[in-house]
Image 1 (cartoon, one colour):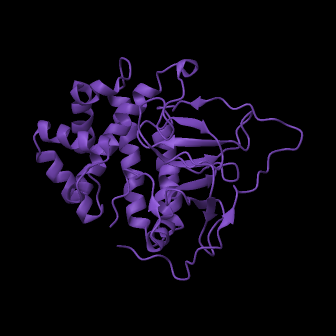
Image 2 (cartoon, rainbow, N blue to C red):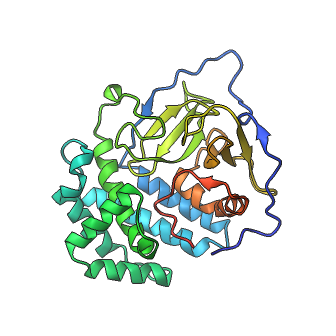
Length: 300
């Protein structure tokens, strides 16, 4: 386990959402969903991981590894583009998923990678396809066993490529709101939420899918775990950017990371989530539970 940075004490929790800096006199008209652009998503994520590694010495080796993995994800989708519709019930039976897992595992070797991750990649490379698919099912359902987390990281990376490719081909106008707290495109849970600064959506909140990368509009100051709108508060770490906070629900005692993309356009929910591990450690110390997991965060 990596310790939280010295002096990392939560700020006094604030009631209500962070201040809205939208322009006075304008009204946001946000689209319900923003589908991922598979041709740029992973490449941009790789750059963000590299940027964060340069500013985060304790986590730099792991962040640089994830930058490399995101580059491999980008190359995987280019080599094996998605075909056909996205149907969650058919994900594990698709031949294309087997191919993507095999291709990604083969090309993800990295000189200087953390020893545990490279050993996991080698075990995964030697694993029969049927066992890989069983592990993919566990990762997709969020029940990957602790002793398989490292292998699960590569499987999650392949699933992200697989689902992002399909989601990018959907028609946004035909997507309807799903059950609260679940992606309307693929049915997965969110990894984090953001206040965005896009045209026609400035100051509004979007959740980011942990698998397919779809962004969907949600009410601000509403728990993504239990849908409560009462007892919401925000906590961040002393000495760190206020653009990153934990949104805490007093009703269910869960939190989700909350980012201000409107202030830093380069924010990537996956990369910035892992780079702000200290906030997770501090929340863990208070007994507040994280609502959903980042499938790429295997640091213990």
